[in-house]
Length: 188
Image 1: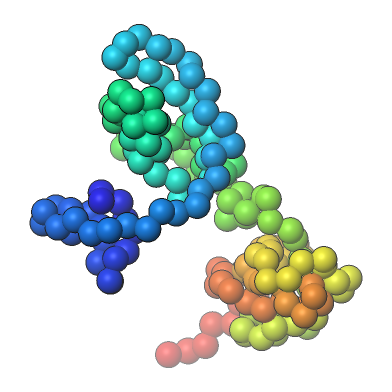
Image 2 (image 1 turned 60 degrees about the vertical axis):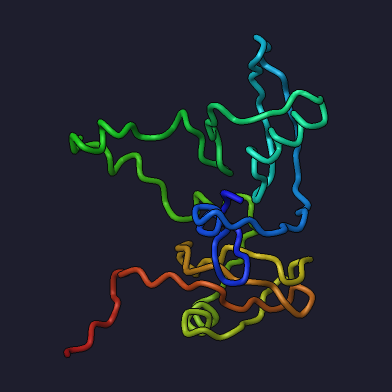
């Protein structure tokens, strides 16, 4: 009940805080691995590698129920999300002290999309894509309706799109509107 999943337009945790419990449908999730790292009764330390949408607290409760001992999460550390690892994170103290080299550690937007296929557009197609139009992809990709990173001729990320027409077209899903050299600024 203490999750951000919606039920009739409200988050489950909002209902739970009011003492309201509703039936929740089971959800299919992907768990790549569960490794037992330490056992010191009544506690155990597990390393879970899972896909998005997996509620580790529910997984712990389900494992405990299956073992007949009950289970709850005492401490949860997310050590990696996609390409971002905890070991590469900036400590709060570094942020609040305003160290000069923080900008050197900021990654470009496409760092979050490294596992998505890349589509490069010529100048005309990039302009049309930037105006919200679906454009042809050459050569055609082998996917349909899957997310892709979309770049202009200069190699700049201009947005994300979804392939259609058997990978022959890409339609905009999100367009990045960053100030670029040469951007026209019209008077107010």
